[in-house]
Length: 187
Image (cartoon, rainbow, N blue to C red; front, top):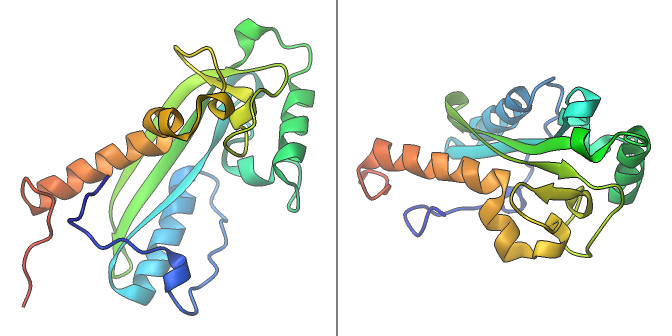
């Protein structure tokens, strides 16, 4: 989404990257912890995210605990089983949910800005589809008749909470560096 204006790397390219514990109670806090810690090591622009599923009937759970909802060693299937168990008996009309993503951009250990995106939808009564990961087989985005796991990556990525957050990141970087989004020349 940033085009070729930036060289993008992930943590696998950073030798001895710190293992940042997600101790925050919000997506913003966790994304900030990660962005600040890694930017302190690199001195570069660092974009970190924290994302998860919020279910209205469960007062926003699993939320920041989405990846480890059924326990620290749980896999996607276990998390999905726990979610369905907690929603047992909840009518379809009360299964509103959203995927939420918060991204934080930091540089030299300081937060520059935060961004967010979400996609509204509902939770199915049983998994559908073989694609995607996490809660994708249970989540049907608004306006769609298929789960994220059924829609396929191209459609899902265009509708996703991360795509919406990245649109904000791209716009902010473009405004910061001029209309092209390219960083200023440095000597």
